Each structure stands twice: as structure tokens, then as C-alpha cells.
Image (cartoon, rainbow, N blue to C red; front, side):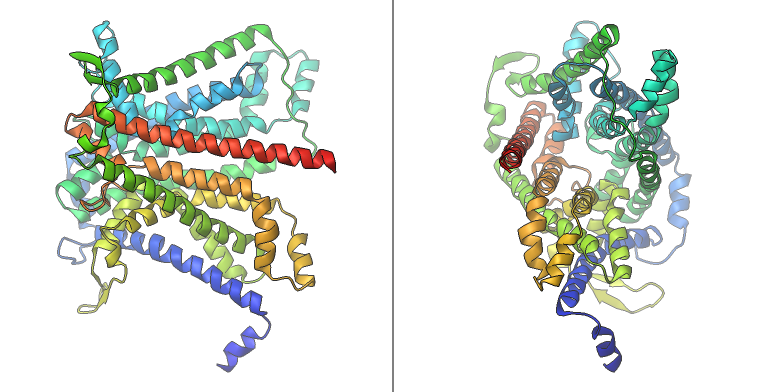
Length: 575
């Protein structure tokens, strides 16, 4: 007790409160990130009776030719779809960043639409376009849709906005002095592209490749709709756990899924540091110079990408408004009658999804912002702050499928055996959350934790530390400074965090496909079940409803942001 008092004697009451709050955030991440992952790893080295068997499960996995083929299929899908999506995103981002293209905002927003829709919607649109009775199939443009071709097309569209977002950031960091020097030496546009532009965005390009590779490698939605008999790792996990109740083999597949995600995470950390170091304070922003021929080509390319996006989502919307494709094309709103879909529980599934997304958004934003604030604005307790920061960015390396898989193994267990200590068991205090909406809320928060945390950290870093210094000198409590100064200045970032949590929680499938229960039905899983049962039109209608809600939320956010910006401009002018 004496030693504890001596240690605490150098801390104020505010320091103790901050330390307690940091530890609370750390305990939250340990309980709902570290412990579920430990459970997943433990299961992979046990048999069904819970006996430690070492690498026996891995040996059985790699001895199964069908499962090995799934690894090959997954890598092939991920590589091809990554090359396609990143290539298209590169030219799209280049056109919007470096060329005089009209309606840039419109083109960019249309290009971002896949982010707001469940990935199953892309598969459904492909069925209506290239399926056995598809529009293009009837016109003579048939493709082998069900299998690798369909998955690649769907994944390429799904990953396109992600790659575009990363590359737009990379293109925004350019030094115009290099281009001026190149123009003075009469350097051709082709040579400038390969000697200045591509080297300047190489870290962003590498990051885009690895991130999109991970997205396509771990996605469950598209393969579940148009995969047919073409097995990939994400669907293998589902078959092992849900179909065969083989949790141990599912854990092995989950660990295999982790490897590319961890590699992508490492590359992301390295490239971000190098890209930031490459931009100096003396850099001059890039100035777009008119060039009629290339500007026209860039505009045409943006139009083609936009038309392709609109085609997919227009077809899906059309499919949701007809009675029976292609035999009865009469208009109907019956598919939007949620009382008649998902075995009569469409309304409840839709309502649950909205409630879960709202709770995830508000609770996730509070936890992530508070964690970022305590890490950035606290000067003491460097050890626990560094550890909490590491835990906060770790979910970026965890695929949604692995999050859901680890959660079901952790929360479903009523007790845990202590490895190598026979007879010793621990009761699971979180077992009561299994089968409730809270397990899905927690999965959403952990799955999407890192991006909002990074957003909050970036916003907080821009604030002058003098706010806290002055507050301390005037004996103003830190929470008063946080509520009166920090939070109002960070409101744009906070709204962005809210929208990110809500949008992703509403449409995610991979993280929650293992966690839903008959008592807690959700819309995204209902769509998968409806499509599997052949109810494609109602599934398309449910997808469109989720898309409309996400777009509405985003539009409201953009409107609020525009109002805040105008208010700031007026204040600046008046002062």
C-alpha cells in the first residue's frame, strides 16, 4: 500500500481519472478483441472434445484437396479483381485529380455507391444482366457467370471505391515544381507519367493493391450469390461452422484468412509513414493545366465508369419492381412489402438492422473518440497509451469473417478450460450476450473500430496542445475543455465517424453471418437467405432499401457539413 501511495503521489485527481478511463478502453478492447482472437487460435489447436492436438487440424486441412483448391481459388479471385479494380481506380482518380473534367463531384459520388450497398446487390444485378435469363444473355452476350467470372466482376466493383478513395488521397499529395521543371525541359506527357506521377503515388498504389486484395480475399457476400460451386475461403468457413458445426476446422480456415490481412496491415503502416515523409513543407500544390484531347478522354472514361455503376444499380432497382423475371414484367411494389418476405419477418429483420446500426454508430463513436482523445491529449502513462493505441489499430488487420468467427466461439462458450491444466475451468461472464443484438453491436464496433479511431486521431492532432496547457494553468477540468473546445472543433470528424459506423454496420455480412439467431434476424442475412431460396426480387428490394437509407444518411451528413462550412465562412468574414 505504501508503494502504491508513493506512485500516486505525483499524480493529480485528473491524472487518476484519465488513467482509469484509458484502462477502461484497454479492458474493453482486451475483452472483445484479444480474448475472442485467443479463443479462435486455441480452437485451431484442439479437437472437437477440446483436447490439445497441436498442428493436427492444420495437417488435416492441408491434406484435403477440396480445401486446398479453395485457397488457390481465393488467391486467383483476389489477384485478378485487385488488378482490375486498382487499374480502373487509378485512371478514374487521375482523371478527377489531374484533368479538367466537368461534374467531378457527381462522378466521384456515383463511383462511391458500392460502399453503401450490400455486396449481394452486385451479385443480384449480375444475375439479371448475365444470368441464364439475363438482359445481356438474351442479346447474345453470354458469359459463364456462376463461378470465378461472376465473383471477379462483383469483387472488382466492390473494391473500386475503396481503391479510388486511397488513390485520390495519393494524387492530392503532389509537388507542382516537379511538373514545372519537366515542362521547362519539354518532357512528354508519357514520360512525366512514368517518371513523376507514378513514383509520386507509388506508396498509395501499393497500399491500394494490398487493401483491395484483402477486401476481395475475405468477402463473403458476392461468392455466396454468384459463386456457384466455385468454393473460396470465406464460404468454406461458413460451411464448416454453420453447415457442419466443425468449429475447429473453421478456426483453421479463419487463421488462414488472417495472413493476407496482416500483411496488408503491415504494408499500410509502412507506406503511410513513407508517403507522409515524401511531402515537404516547401511543396507546391498541383495546378491543373488545360489539355483538350486528354481532358476529353478523361471525361469519356469517367462517363463510362459512371454509366457502368448506374447500370448495375438501375438493373437491381428495376428487378425489385417487377413481379417475375422474365415472365411477368408488370410493375409491382409487393417486393417492398416486408411483411411478405423473409418468412414474414422482413419488418423485424429490417427494424433490427436499423436499431443495431444506430447503437453501433453512437456507442462506437463515443468509445473510439474517447480512446483517441485519451491517447492524444494525455501526456503521462505512455506505456498503457502505446498499448491501447496498438490494440486500437489492430482491427484494421482482422477480416470481418474472422471477427464473427472468433465472436461465436468466444460468446457461445459457457466456460473455458485452461490449457495444460486439467480440471480447471473458468465461467464465461459474457455468455449471456450470445443470441442478443449486443453481440452483433460489439462485433460491428470491433470490426470497424480502426478507421474511426484513425479519423479521430487525425482530427485531434490538428488541434493545438495549448488548449490543454492553458486549461491546466487555469485549473479548468479536462472534461470541460473537451466538451467546450475539443468536441466542437472535432464535430466534422465525429459526424464522419458516426456515418462510417452506421453505413458499414447496416450492410456488413461477413462479420455477422455467424452471429445472427432466430431471435435476432437482420436484413443483410435475410438477403442471403432469400437469394439462396430463389426469392431474388424480394432480396433485391431489401438491398435497395438498405442502399436508400445509407444514401439518405450520407446526404444528411453532407448537408450538415455544408451548413457548418458556410457558418464558419460567415464567422471568418465578420471577424
